[in-house]
Image (cartoon, rainbow, N blue to C red; front, side, top):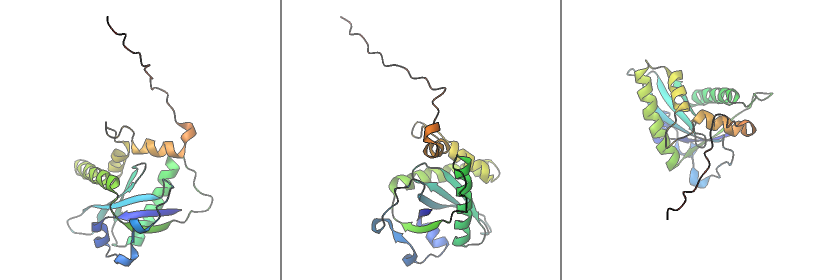
Length: 186
């Protein structure tokens, strides 16, 4: 599996990634596979600087993972992301591969405006939830992935499930109201 991962400037600086290790999105053919394109943003660090939280968000489904970095090591963080991603895919209806799937990461820089804006919103929502819930990372993830509003009428979890199991999308419980044109009053 190939993952194309946008790294924010703050993430690049945190891990001291040399510019030559990051490809510009304008010089890279982006994958057409919805699972491949993700963004990574630094959320918050502890006061002592020993733990850092990072937000990973899928560009299409908006499904998000919050991961902790304790080692200042990008390879460890990406390994953790790989494990959490495979588990999330499995939980949403994608069977585990027979042999553990290896992920090939391509680090990207650029300005994917819709993803960046949505990640800023999710980052604020995550920090608010973490502060209100005694830094419970799992609860914050659940909140991000079940969030619905007028601008986001389907949760990220449901969006992922629909992409993984399109034939099993259920419309039970949804009422379709027929359009009845008003008769012109004379």
